[in-house]
Length: 528
Image (cartoon, rainbow, N blue to C red; front, top):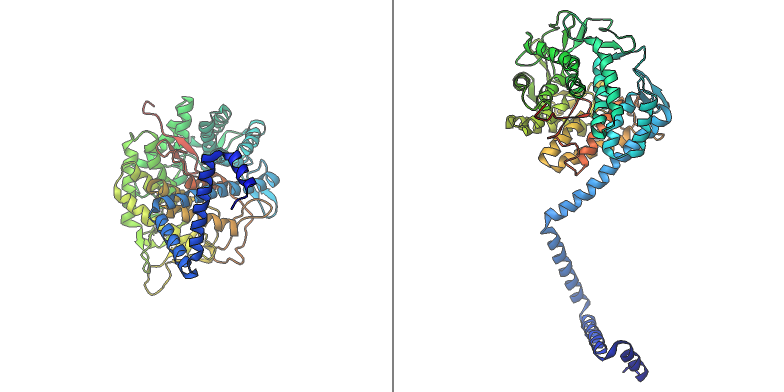
């Protein structure tokens, strides 16, 4: 019984109808609680177990929802993890190598190649894509006030084109800031003396201050990849400036290589002579160093120009068939598909990490209407590139892998002592990015996440930066080499960020093509 004082209080506060509903509800709750308390402990346990079981079954009946929650959480965490990795690398560069080409993170100093701030320029569009506004602003100020190409210095035509010219053009397109276009015009013009050769096949080195060019001291040859992987950048420079000299120079190289003798089913040798304009040291064919990006740029020039230049497409399709016919093999233990090297008719079961660009390139072609079996091959090669990481004790790929063709040996992959280094290269995560964009298979994100974690575990330097390592097979002493390549910021972290981002319109692959240094350039409008 409530006391009269308590009844008066309730009626004055809530009124009669509210008092009745309040007390009735309370009595019902008390009644339910008494009934619950009257149950035995076993009965209560069974009821709770049944409710928990029904709840779990309800959750599991909506796998797409739970998967979406899981992926969304992972994507947010992983995207931020890439930003954090970039900031850590940038911290070391800013503290110990600001304005110089490369960071030496262990000795806390810098390395110089051309003396043009390669790491900073290579990283400009990465910072913009990652949304790192403060870091981008300080880098832009350095470009505006400190970057000068009026220097008595020799630069490599290929490297300065893909890193500097490509980086400046890309950053101009992303930001609309004409500072970067003006700098691109400057370096592009200064590189043109390289094309003043008897054959119009460019020299490898240019003095951008003197306006002179020359081949390496030991040969008059240039590598085929270097002279055929500058076209995207110079063609785009002509389109922006309306000055045809840049496009004319690089397309003359393309025309000559197209009609040259010495190919094997569309595959090209590794060297070309700047005097004669002919292939040299014939008989060796690879998709690794000195030839790799030739094949990449055939497809990407065709895409850049709106799929109109049929000779580029024909050369690309023929080359892929040449790969299938001459270079493609499978390991004996696990049937891993790999791309070997051919030397005077003998196949060497060796594949550079550089070749791991190929799955992404094949997938890009299939996305643009090329044969479906290109995608089938991309899937197989992507698995192999993943295994080059997964089978190593550090979870990081060696520079070169040798593949086992003998069933008596249980290992698929062997690594020679001289090939066990890892330079923080981007090719595998590049292909993972393409494969995820086109398939939406989350395993590619998981593989990329594993790689990033291995970078953090074995290559991260506490004071800032990441270092290449000398031995991917020794997790106890991976032998740090005290060098952070500019492409770690320009390519590797950029592709990892795009792999983990849920925004498929962030650098849409229907609107941009990436140069071989991961700098996005626009696909030309159909009116161009």
